[in-house]
Structure formats: structure tokens, C-alpha cells
Length: 301
Image: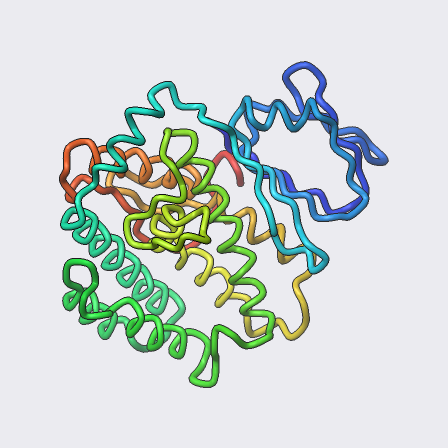
């Protein structure tokens, strides 16, 4: 399984050398493509050959470009890698509304539960209140617990004056981390033959990643926990070190029903379980992550 994330923040030339990526800077670095899950291009003076672009599709690598503020603004995804893409698309399109609403409720409950764990891990008040929110989630989140919980949660985590639209380090870091997660989830959806624009709950006609925006919900508190742990020492823009730390969250451990694994591996397992939900029409088959204290996976330490 791919497990490396590569972030390039200085001028470089990227080329393919047989089955490996070669990054040419002052010194050359060679990395097997089969080890790479994510490449982030975070400098305007990076050149990349077609061989590398082709390899990203061949090996299922998410390649992120960044804008003038160095935030991810596009992602290259592999094209229809799955051998049964048409069959998977039929499962996806035949998903009934009642099943979709029950599945969304499972996702919302786990998101709120993880937000509560995040508060507990940060020593903040409100963990029990989040448990109460979880118990009130109904099919399709008809009681709007997700938005109510979010308003309470962010105020507890970052202070009562905090708003998600504020221009500040915290929001810049959250948005960066969420964007990386979203791209990796979209990569996994495509790899398993799912169509990212067909969501379970999210349904915007202008959003090419509706399904990724469904799956990401239970994973967001991983980013929240990391950002909250650093927020007191930050009062300026994101640094390259900040961005590397956010990308490296993909290689931190998280708890899944089958044991602890990296966030990258958990994304893949969640997507596999979502396929089973669609195939067997049972939302109880969905496997989602449970937040734990942040620590790098052993092979990444």
C-alpha cells in the first residue's frame, strides 16, 4: 500500500526514471512510485514531465497543485482504475433515499463523536454535550445536529469569539488540512470505481466531490486536533513547516473497527465499507474512524 507523502516547497524538476520519481534539486531524490500516495507541489518554479503525470494515474497518486497563497487548488486523480467501475456506478446510482439518509446519519454521529473526543483530548469542556448531540441524530440528520454540534464544538475548541470565516492562522490551517484529506478521499473513491460527484448527502451540481465531502466528515477532527494543539503559538500565516505537518497527518494513527492504522489506510477501509453498504443495502456495514491521540504510525516515525 502507498504510504509516502511528498511535499515540494523549493524549485525542482520532477521526472520519471523507470518505476521511480526523481526530484531534481541541489541533490537528487529517488522515490518508488508504488510507495507514494500524495504529491503536493507548493512552489511556482516546479517543472514536471508527462512521464510523472502518467505515473500518477498509473499508480493512483493524488497530485496537488497550489495557488498563490500555497493552498491546494486542484488535484489530479487516476481515471477509472477499477476493473468493475460500471457495476460500482450502478450500485451507487441505485442507492435508495432511505438508505442514503440512514448512512448519512451514521456519518454525522461519528463526526460528532470524534469532535467530542477532540475536546476531551485537548482538555476542553463539552465532551458530554457532544455525546448528547450524537444521541439526537436522526435519519438524514433531520434534527440538524451536525450544524448545532459544530457551532458548539468550534466555540469550545478555539474560543467563543472564533468563526470559521475569520481570517486567521487556525482557519488557514484547517482549510489546508481539510483540502488534503478531501483530495486523498477523492483518490480512493476513484480507485474503487465510485463517482465522486454523486454524494450520499451532499448534492451540489457545481461540486465534483460531493461523495468525498460525505466521507470526510468523520476524519475532519484529526485536522482539528492537530491545529488546536498548535494554535496558541501561532499568530501569522502558514509556514512550510505548518503545511508539512498537516500533510503528515495522513500518516498518523487512527482507530478503526479492525484496529489502529494510518489515516490513509483508514480512508481506504472506509471507502471499501461504503461499497459494501451500497452492494448489500445495509448502513451498519459502514466502518468509520474513531479519533485517538495523535501519533505517527510506526513505519513513519
